[in-house]
Image 1: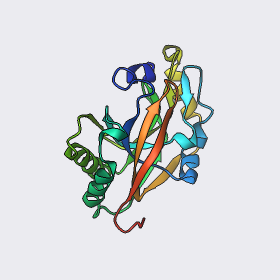
Image 2 (image 1 turned 120 degrees about the horizontal axis):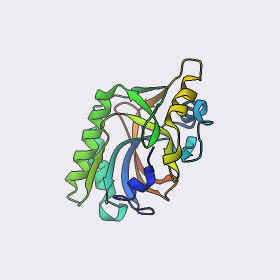
Image 3 (image 1 turned 120 degrees about the vertical axis):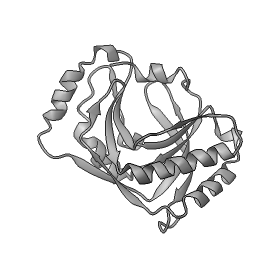
Length: 203
């Protein structure tokens, strides 16, 4: 496996605060997502706590809160998603990738509608940034860090297979969140800015 944060630092340096759009689980949803995998954190992996679980729609690379009128951005996004109905994302047993233990989710179609809406609205601000849109719904339960090259991915996969029961958790996507996000080379953190409810979800 490879060091996720080392790779990340090439385009998103530690400490720099970039705007992100997310679907965020409730505390109960986050607990259900993360609890089965909290023991799968050998040296070289950093566990994501329940309070750090997030499903990214867009990373606006190089764009901070002070670089854009966030009120106007939120208003535009609200208009663009005003007809998108809430939907449920389902996440099953995670996969071991080169940079993370990752939960993939579905359905992808309404998720992509949201990705396109926030990407277009952020671009419409005219601010300079590099868009990093998500191609599919996913959350990570652990990221690789220093020492990742020593992690035995086959052992991790065997440990996942050893959880001998059906695993599935859901997240109700009834709103999306604009945050200012950063990392310290080990953890990802964010400060909430605004949330935008989907059609019929209420404020």
